[in-house]
Image 1 (cartoon, helix red, strand yellow):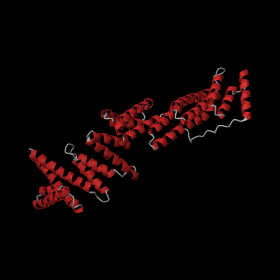
Image 2 (cartoon, helix red, strand yellow):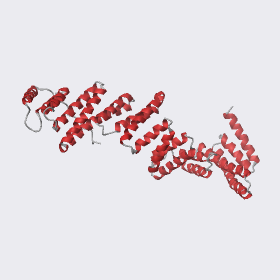
Image 3 (cartoon, helix red, strand yellow):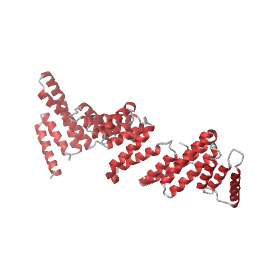
Image 4 (cartoon, one colour):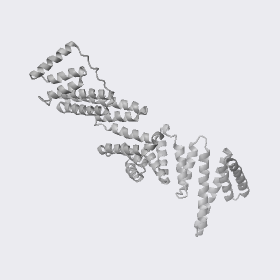
Length: 419
């Protein structure tokens, strides 16, 4: 926000000459001040800051306000003094005192800009950035080291130092979300998520349309079991961000949790399509798994989108350099179940033409199931389920001998795995 991290010069040491200068300035103050743009009170405060006597600097500047309250220099150096007091308080682990002083520093700095923006804006921004980034840098170190309480303290100080930025509050919320996902804080999960939700509400109050914050809020609500509220946010976000894979992943997760498997499958298909289209191979690692999951979900009897299911499972096989047992058995099971569902439907059908159409469609599916079954057990001869589905498919295609042999092999393998 403010460029590279600035540095403050180290305060100077007290010298006899400086002490005499300070004494002289105090004498002038007693007589009513000096002529010129910078008051003697402010000049005196600068010397106190250099001598690390920050409380005295604050006192002298406030004494100067009795004579004038429109000197930008005074407010800038008041901000510097309060910033230094905040740093001292942090060093003593007095975070409440530090928070107070960072807040006072911010107000003083902003007043300097109000009075003379052309001269003080850049200088003030450097000082604000120093306070803000110093605290955020320490927060990151503590967060990475899992000192979560300290990290939160420094992030709250960063917000006090620069309340124009809501990043610290957002970061605290995300840290609490992260904590809630670890076993270390399992007993505090609800408490942490509730705190995260409250902080996100605070940030969203200032940025109600902030997409990433809304996404975080929906995730927290879903994790808290408030699925209806989460789903409403997701639906609103999806209308405007239909190609954001992070959003689609969260929607898929919520849908699967709610056992809305068709919606979850739809999201997975969109995600894979987007990953394949973007040309970035780094995000393709989960494509096969998502295609298989979506294919299995579409193949559920209550969904019965078998054509989509088979197409996705075939697509997964094509992507695999060496097809796995899981993807092969998933495709075999889906093809067989599709044929079986058509045959079962035909037995209830009263229209002869429709009945025959269903049987005609089922026949090649059973034939393909035999081919897939032979391929599976040829690659993985120890796969008991493969022999079971192969046996059922062979029976449907009029091969009782083959079906009997496959079923016996299934029984043998099953006995070994379940003694």
